[in-house]
Structure formats: structure tokens, C-alpha cells
Amino acid sequence: MERLRRKVDAKLMAWKVDAHRLPLIVKGARQIGKTEAVEHFARGSYAHVVEINFALQQAYRDIFDGGLTVDAIVQAISFHDPSLVFVPHETLIFFDELQACPQCAASLKAFALDGRYDVICSGSLMGISYQEIESNSVGYKEDYTMRPLDFEEFLWAKGYRAEQIETLYRHMAELTPLTSAEMAALGAAFREYLVLGGMPAVVWRFIERGNYSGSLALQRQLLADYEEDITKYAGGLDKGRILAVYRKVPVFLGKDNKKFQISKVAHGARRREYVGVTDWLSDAGIVLLSYAMEHPELPLRGNYDPDNYRIYYGDTGLLVAALDEEAQDDLRANRNFGVYKGALFENIVAQMLVAQGYGLYFYRNAAGTLEMDFFVRDKDSLVPVEVKAENGTAKSLRRLVEDTRYPDIRYGIKLGAANIGWDGTFYTFPYALTFLLKRWLRERTENLETC
Image (cartoon, rainbow, N blue to C red; front, side, top):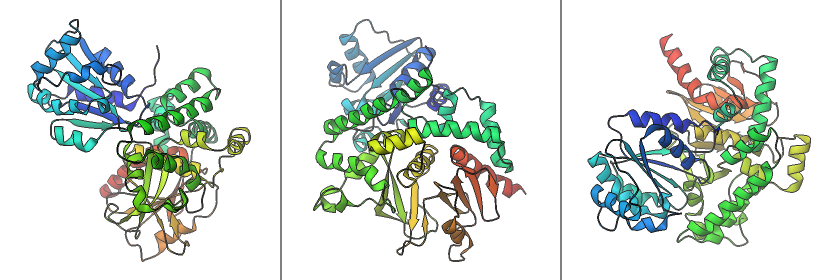
């Protein structure tokens, strides 16, 4: 059976050939393909695989009760299923749904020191007390965070080859505009990705059927599943408040300033009542938080207000599914991608930046006369990134670059429906090429240093 190629595939292969590999934890939001990826890797890479799903096989949660030595754990597993085979250096032990048995993390040190068996754990960030896992296994594990399919993975699913993606990058690197045929094909694929998002089940259905039929129903079911999981895993936090914030994300994105405001979540809501709620949603991988910079200067991480932020969906396709019926009709029938004040484009760019490892930061001055959607950086510069839902002027971007009060900013980037270009102040790229931005920034800096 065919499957979606994922970037985690290469990560898993590189992990296996590393002579100093540690137990690996593959973490991420629910239903993004973690289990399938590990199972596919295991089938092709090991003579023997022992897979335990702590959510479906609850009886196995006691395998750590008799001690945390490797021999004690292997013996306990064998008592549950004597048919399982453990051959040193030829066996992968896959502990799935780690959040259902956090005690498993305490065993990773023993497996790391013992070295006879490879171990991969997988779990949803929703429900994992990762601080507890970290304290139990710090220094004896490796982490890898999976996310929904990024745009490059979506292009792979559509059949794009490495050389075609390299052609796109060469256009960026050489600042040569895409041809009209390239713009049309890339734009069509990006609009599909904007509507579908990167949840594997949604993308796979689209690839199989060649159309959007059933995609909205599947996305809405995923939204409902997330809500059910919130009620299951929220722990000591108020589940009703988490749900209230989660359901209001599209409302905030529909506002001009897109700022998250507790007072707008519920009548009479107070900040102290919602402490930890947005962090829980972010830690679970459900939402992405973008923090307001106090001043547009470096360093990014030391220059933001932790109480002033915007919330984006972790998957833009789920944001699309959360829109009201009228917006759905406008989007799908009229292909009006500017609905919700350009929030769809901001959300997809946020998702694409996070997929490359960037944190999210924005700026808006007190008067609301200067605003920037995102900031990234190269080796020496702070780089403002403006997302234009329509092809218009970029007044804030130009002002940030040209104003001497912002010495860390030397150039900017505008993302929109326009072709590749450079006007002496900022670079313009199509939205779709955002997935190549980190590589472009790195190689741009390297090329300048060698000149």
C-alpha cells in the first residue's frame, strides 16, 4: 500500500545508523502520523519488532512495576505475550501512546545504558506531562517533534520530485521570477494546501480521490476529536475554559489586531482564571502562539511580552473547517481566500515558519500605525516578514527597514501572490515558497560572507 512520504522517515533512518543513538521520543499533536511513521520504519529496518500501545493494551502498563532494569522489563513483557522475540541488536521496542503510561520514561536511562535493544517512544503532546518525562530521562533520550505535513511534504504527496523543488529554490537564490506556468502550478498546489492543511488523513483522502469530497467532514471530525481529547487529558486545568479558548481562536483571528483577549472569551473572564490554558493548548500542539515584541530589535527571545500574543491553529486546514457556513461557501465556491481578514494566509505562514523551527513574533505599536506580522533572523539581522492577503503597498515593512531607529533591521521580506523580486528594501516571494525561507536566509548569509 502506498503511503505519504514524511520528513521523519529520513530522521529515523539517520537515528538508526548513529552508533551513539539514545532512545528516541517522537512527539507531536494527535493524528499527525507518528505511529504510522514509526511502524513503517520498523518493518523495513528490524528483524524483530515489539510494539506496545499503552492506550489500547492497558494491561502492559504494569511492566515497570517489577523494576526498571532492562531484563525485568523484557521479562514482564514476555509474561504478557510469550511469543514476542527479543534478539539483542536486532530488536526494536516501540512504546506507543506514551502519555497513557508516563512511567515508561523512567526506563529510558536503563535502555540507553544497556544498549541491547533500540527503543522508540511515541506519544501525543496532549496529555504528556513532559516536565515529568524530562526529569525521569534527561540525558538518556533524544526528542523529535512531528507536525502536520508541511508544504514540501504536500508537494511530495502530489508527485513533485526533489529536482523540481530544487528548481523552485534556485529561482529564490538567483532572484529570477518563476515562469507563468510555474506560478500557476505552484499557486494551485498552495491553494489546495491552504484548504486541506497537513493532517495526513485529510491529505491522503484528497490524493486518493483527486478532489475535496469528504475533506471538510473529515476535518470537522478531527476538530471534534480534539475537543474530546481536551476533556480526557486536560488534567487539573478547567476543561471548560480550555474548550472556550480553543473555540474562540477563529474569532480572534477575524479581528483587525488578532490579539488574544481573555475578556472576549467569556463574560466577566479574568486572566488569573485562565493561567496555563493557552500554554496547555500550545504544548499539546493544537495551537501556535505568536508573541508581541516590545521593540523590533534583537534578540528575539529576550524581547517579547509573554502576556501579549496571538493564537493560530496548528493546522490551517482545521482553521478552515472551523469557519462558519457562509465563509465555507465563499471560500470553496468563490475561491475567496481573503476571508477572515487575511487570517488564513497569516495562519499558513505561521505554520510554515514553525515547521522550519522558527518561533513566532509580531510587532504592533501602541498607536496601531506600525505593524509587522512576523520576524525571523539571519546571522546578523532581524528580518521583518509581512504577509499580504492582497497585492498592496508594504508601508510598515518599508518603514521598518528605512527608519534609523531600527538598526537591527537591514532588509525585509514580503509574502504574497506576487512573483519573486527585490526592490532594494525588501524581497518579495510567493506564499508557497515560505517553506524554503530558512534555507534561503542561511545561504544568503553564507554567500555574502564569501563575497
